[in-house]
Image (tube, rainbow, N blue to C red; front, side, top):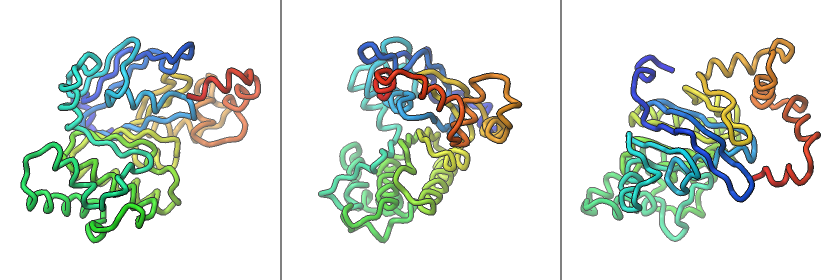
Length: 283
């Protein structure tokens, strides 16, 4: 992580976050801080709890224990009205883009501005063009979502996410369903926007090529706990190590996930697990 980011106070603070659904513990004492201006990648396999963690950070669900601070404000005990004010200060790119199919691309981007500001139509139209230009879609403002490719839908969703000039951007599997070239373009867009807009980015993904391209720091989740938080370079060392050189089972598990190897601790755990347990773990 660059020194100028490392010295900044956290813009997101998660303290002892715990959440269960029925008898299933999905998050188990999560502690994590995200510094202002950095790109934090949260990764892990299916059912590890990363999407549930994201939902807590954006205030859509309440934890059983622990807390979440955004902009140094505790959001888990906020009223809905206060939380709505906080939500204006961050943007979200959903996995599918989540565009309104009955609105044009430009109208989708304009929607937050019409809902949450008192700007006149002319100013909104100018701002929509600026946001679409940032993601390379200004010439497609009048198209309907059905006319867009998967990558274009992601970029349109991102233009809408930055409409209100947020300080934090959340990305939920931004590369999911994209071909390698389009995925690389989205990765570069995340990096560019983080720098140009001076925002903090939190990216939830299991795509390792993307993760190692964009991350300042990385957080690895497994079965609701954090296995490791560290600089991208630390994870690169683990990825490139020989398994025999790693003493701990945790490091070997992280290495297998990062490399996508067919054999390793994750595979052995699944083979040894009870079928019912395996099904219940996938939340």
